[in-house]
Image (cartoon, rainbow, N blue to C red; front, top):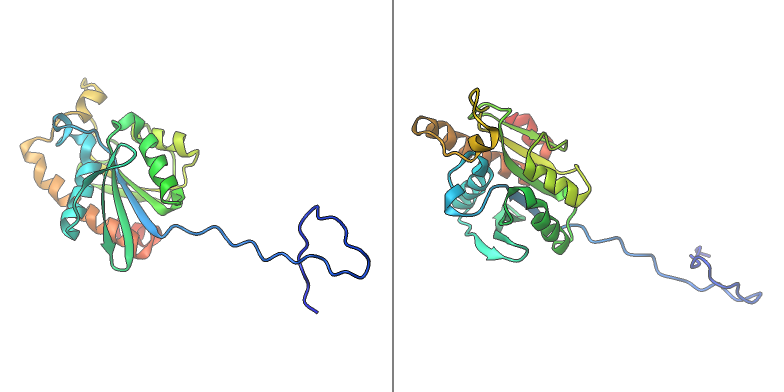
Length: 217
């Protein structure tokens, strides 16, 4: 006779009566989409600044895949589409950089996704312009947008793609530097890294973070 599961705390049955049978608890549904978040600041004033390289990278991927950003819930713009068989959502928080986590947390909750289903793309002053680095998880490294996301999710367990913008020259304030636009001579390197970032994001969707790290780090 097959074994049956008795609900915890259920009252004892009369002698000779079979215990009540409960069906197995179904597992929590897994996330059916991949979410890519690009960090930046909303508004034309910041559109082509170093701190908006995450926004630019998502725009490059959207252009490549024929996706269009639209205003969406949770103070964000989103573009939806597919890469192969995978459904993806590109998310740009419209909360300003240091409150990015408020939007990201709501998007994850609404999509029934966890941090491991997400890739965050952002600028990094610790990498030279034109370089990029993928990581499975980690600290914020002083980046205000990543700090906000970690605080809101209570987790560091999300992949991130850091795009180098170079360190500020001596005597230049860090915040002033990242809110500046790129110089004319820097744009060839910017365009090149954005194209490579789009490829890295596609690889993450198709093959996961390990393969993406092997190919692009």
